[in-house]
Length: 144
Image (spheres, helix red, strand yellow):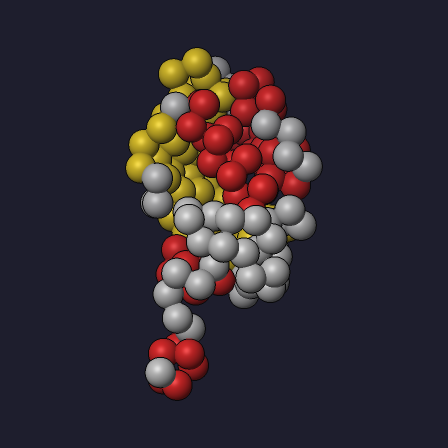
């Protein structure tokens, strides 16, 4: 079952984050799916789809790379890296049209009957905030 669950996660990264095919979330997540996100809190499938759409809109050239992936029991752990050019508004911040520094994250997904039932996401939110200009970079803060 572990290899099948890993294949589902690889599909999520490729289809949802890589290609913007948000309907894949409906196919691979349970009806009562819960997404525990570092910035947005807990949400259902619709919230996960909206979150993916928001990031893909803000960073149209978004690239997400799986760095490590492994399974244990009913869970899959994925260490990933995302990077893109900030081209559209995000969280009220105007785009700077700059390619940000990579943002690293870890996601743990719990499976039920071959579908994702729950997902926990932690990522370098500080780097994301720097990339969109919400927080000055260290060099910018020192210069001020």
